[in-house]
Image (cartoon, rainbow, N blue to C red):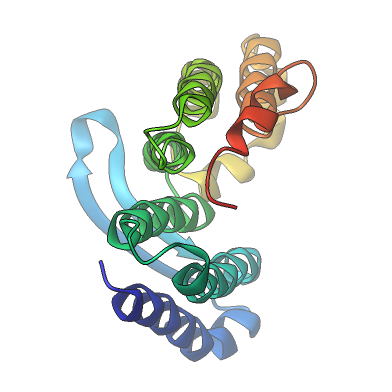
Length: 212
């Protein structure tokens, strides 16, 4: 992937957000839904509200700066295209998390961030520390991801829906469910491993083997 393509994709995303911003900030969230696997309750359901607008803007804005910086940071002999492809995958997965209105779809994007993190950390694959850091990050965040999957499946059962907008209106129902303690524990476990919180922080220093 060429730097211009990656930068153009991020800039185009920012432009689309700017076009959508007036309506979203006026209180009209933008939604999109495509039926995917109805039997599993899994739709390609996206929701752009002010909070999603903020996070998507941060992801795209910072991503654009990283793309521009990478042009001078990486040596000319290095596979810049491979790095940018991994970076775009990571950026797209994060945007998917921010905009997903279906928690099963959110889980798919969540796991894609683990995969793309593994690829980015192990970018310099000829280095032992990069390979070790990539494997460690994938093992820890992957294990946490399994916990999060279980927690989200239980959350959908407790709420009677996998649509995030619906779940948010049924907070009292979820809290009254006997599944609530397990849901809370599993979701927190997934979040703590991904964000390298104690006692799962040990993988983060090894992740510095990635281009940074």
